[in-house]
Length: 203
Image 1 (tube, helix red, strand yellow):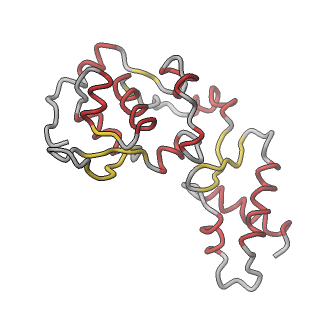
Image 2 (cartoon, rainbow, N blue to C red; image 1 turned 135 degrees about the vertical axis):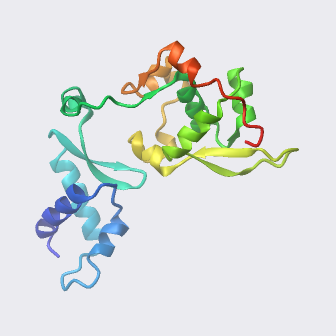
């Protein structure tokens, strides 16, 4: 298939999809077509679309799961005004836990508590798993066999990362707020209210 004919089809697919699409997934959508493109043709068309939308209001961004259309970060200030619903607010404790899992994985809840110096609320682990940012990777072969946690592809997608290698170094993160500036943190009273539950001894 000619690249110029393929590009608008791919644009339509990216615009209609609610999740990133990989080259392999795009290829499968053309199976059976008379003019079925090759993966190399799809890859070339995608890269040309990336370049086409490089300076626009939205971009074709590659993340861990594939490519997706998304609003450029430069315009986030105005776009969020479209929605009355406020963005989710996360406690600093939750973000510290997520950061430790991302940088130290695989890691157990006990190891997170040792580093932070405080117990980790079971609600925090539950929230991270419900967001599909964190998942169990197995069990550490020590007494009690505690669960080992690591990040997911959804975590990478959410933070616009292709791989964990793209995480900023710890030296570059002087303040947790820089982990992702779009986060709205709870105040201290709200954060404390969300961490009153007893530790989960089975974690």
